[in-house]
Image (cartoon, rainbow over all chains, first blue to last red; front, side):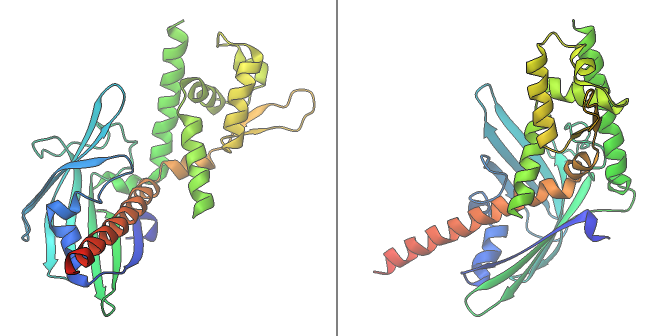
Length: 167
Length: 116
């Protein structure tokens, strides 16, 4: 795994370690912070055991419609108050995995990613390190941005063709 | 980080327009002058120039220095930036953790109030 294919973010929170653990593992807390700006989280099902499933829905109101994005995955590692690892894939509302391409993402988006949360007690405060990594084996994440760019260029060309034929 | 953020937002904003994407698609085939770029569109030259300026500011195209023609060429580097999935996730996570911090502060305040 190269650095290029993962996001690593470190934060220190002014709260005890159990508190931060609950932020990740209890739906009622998770729903209050997770997701891109402007999105709410109406659904966060968490079967918190190794092999247990997660299903999360993020939702945004736009003037014309409600945009929903579902993700699913499985817990890989659970060490209470210390370490949490789960996989994540784009999904439909029933938790069936859908390919990123279907969701309109450029190729090169990995089908499955893995989120690792590591917590460290700093005496009342907590250091959190979150790593979000593309899963390399057999995933389209291998293709990298070069392929993604090829695809984008293709799309641009298609857009141009549509535009000129529409005239 | 802040600068990178702004840069990325500028690229996304520039790409969020079908005319500008079509201009980029044309440039993917090779350099072109503003007049040539304007040709397929039912638009005034100043309107096209405005789109080109937005693309130029986002670093997506480069204008040549040949005084009279100043042909536009596609610059691929910013497109590479936005097609990295990690960049997009980084923004989402940073915003989420800001919210987590705010939420924790709210909870802390509530607890303190309850203690009194």
